[in-house]
Length: 288
Ligand code: 13P
Image 1 (cartoon, helix red, strand yellow):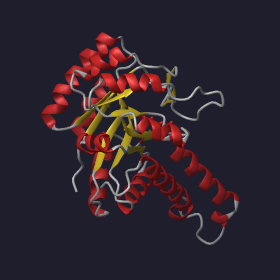
Image 2 (cartoon, protein in one colour):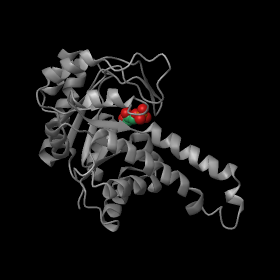
Image 3 (cartoon, rainbow, N blue to C red):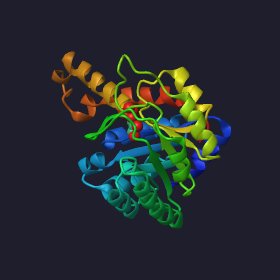
């Protein structure tokens, strides 16, 4: 199946009260683990790629071509969107050109007028091409790819301004942060989430920083319009822990245990288990 825009899958999720996971990918193993899990569980899936990860994989075109080819060779039939995560304006144009089927333009660090201007231009471009567009208001806190946000909470009126430009889904800061949550984290701000959902009509909302948010909060947020949840750090943590265990147990020293296909296998299995657990919590299983 060809890559799809994330709009249809997220509108369906919004109408039916579940969320689709965006799982960030870093390499071939990550991509394979996420795609296989989505197929096994008959779940739609969004593969997220930050500009840093795309650079690591040597460019947007390599990523797009790899994902398209893998969807074909693995016989994936569930809907798959390839999505630029926290794109700059220039990065968005490059990812579109390379064949991504969905874009997040993150203009949250600009003054609102500039965010509106650039988002508006990208709405026009993506609509013409049938590519979905996510916009952001109020930076998501924490650090991702060297960009540090302050745990911000979005202004619902600014969310309305961005939403009314015709974006397909909207990320609003509601106290969520990337990476691990500190022990004294205040939790998600449901008052703001409710106001943003109210003011943005039927636009699906996006929750970034999906690693470590308690299940009850995730499910409450889904009940309030969140239809896309981004998960990155968690897969990295479980992958690293599983590979560390394999090496600490000395398995790389037994026979051909040093073969990267063997060495990385426990990490890949850990990603699969983690993605499965998330899909269960998000309610996207059998929605493919
Ligand atoms: P985590 O790394 O906290 O899971 O957040 C991922 C994310 O929001 C990507 O945009």
